Amino acid sequence: MATLRIPRRFNGPPDSGNGGYVAGLLADRRPEPAVTVVLRSPPPLETPLDVRDERLYDGDRLIAESKGGELERDAPRHVAFDDAVEATRSYTSIEMFASCFVCGSCRADGLRIEPGRLDENRVAAPWVPDATVPLGPPLLWAAMDCPGGWSLPGMLERPALLGSMTATVHGIPHVDERCVVVGEFHGEQGRKCFASTAVYSADGRLLGQAEQVWIRLT
Image (cartoon, rainbow, N blue to C red; front, side, top):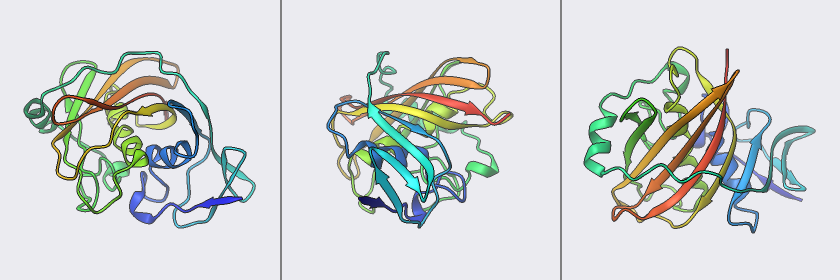
């Protein structure tokens, strides 16, 4: 039986793992090109977690489960790097996300992907990966997490957490490459919200795309 441990650096909310990163670690164990991961409980940090039958457990508590997935939408369209830089100027966070590894504005050691509005349904942010973390599929999953959430309307007033994510990774960026991450909102049903995200390389290649279900906390 394999085990995974989520280092404290890779938090989402202050005391649990970033959903996209944890999902990416679990998805990276599967052979399918697209994988769906459903998050069932907050992933604890610095804790040995068991991987059994493509599911992640903390003792007997189910944290997440994975299966082969299928993407149903086209990826959000490419945005120029300079336009993403301009969009991110409007980024505003809240306390529960301020320390997030992906979008936290208080994290000097995070990805600092701070999505700002392009239009009513889309957000974008620049991302220049550094050499302090391995540039592999789990990091791409992490980068594709938060922009989907920030594409939701009213995220500051009615925050949401990632419920499930289906993603595929087409390529890995280079250290210091000027990438762009885009998120797009696709509607909601009760407390469920639907979004998609994409990461583009400096030359406009699609490096990864994802579709997500977010769950409003209220």
